[in-house]
Image 1 (tube, helix red, strand yellow):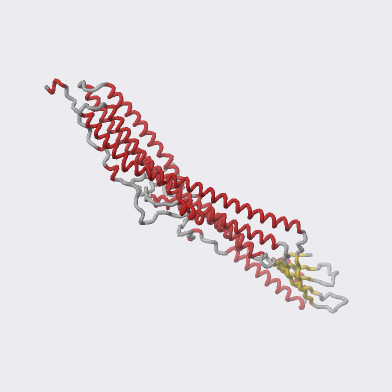
Image 2: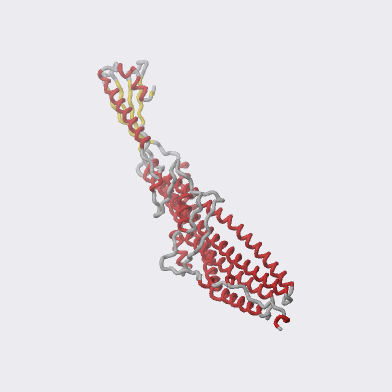
Length: 496
């Protein structure tokens, strides 16, 4: 009858074994003390400090229990500070981080031997020649199996680390995308408000001219129609900022309705990117491809481990028997060494395990090729957006906006001298507004495409020597800030 060792140590049998059996109690006490020591060590083993980890020089600080949540005050409107807050507080990034840390803890588990087994047997009926028996055994896997299991879990942990890095890059790209969209909306609202003020002045001028008989009522109506359209556009643009702020707040794990100061400035660098170089860089540095590379190594190690299953595992043991009650043979203690192995004779099961692992290798290889193609397509799409937006920026700043502003000034002069109509004035002003809105749209598109390219490549492409693609001076002298046009509202009789 096999009993757990604690019951053995407290049973009266251990104390009735006589002088030749005293060492049994000592051995059992030592075993119990050793087991208690291991239990205490396991309970008090230091845990990995997640707050002190640093991944690629990016510290992800996890708030401790009881710490206050994200701040509710308006956050700064500088992009680096928004990115830092998002990396610190985003729950999706934290989840990816903890998945990686969890995988790291599997490595020491699979590379460790199983617990040894200690058995004590007391033959209570005393009908056997052997009164007591103690046995200790240890299972030892075939050489190489533990190392392969450790490599498999290490590869999985590396894949999860790359997925964590991808989550971080995607988060940064999402924050940048929302930030640049917020910038575009703020600038568009600003220039539409300026245009609204100018249209109100035009309406007053048209009404004054109509009042003295030097203009038609259609000019006043046209001005009022344009005012209504621009007022509606301004309200729509103002409302469209709320979803963008919600995106930024969600990325920082803040209530989506919390205020965020609007961007006041933007510095977007001009880059000379070559498609082939960028594609080659992404194939090396893209974290999704790197994660699949790690899983490819893992699947190959799984093939090797499946092949190792053809070899047996060992169990080594030592057995002591108390033979003092022996009747025929001389009484005394006996010791026996034991070796036990499993017999891997079911070859179909083992062969199926090898084929399964080999199929997994083919699967991961195909997934890697598919991911490489997907990254290449996405990257070329974003590079097209980047270059197209860059062309648009230069077109608006160098040609269209200066020419449209010049056209507005000429039309204002002609209208003040009654050489052109009010409709022409409104049309030229509307064209300038459209070009300015398109300019800021192109700036946002360029910055958003660049952020996506960097996320796909897996690293920043901007260096300190890069020049800004923006030309603020081209838009600083807007006709929206000019003085109201001066028109002659006197009657012909007053001239006489």
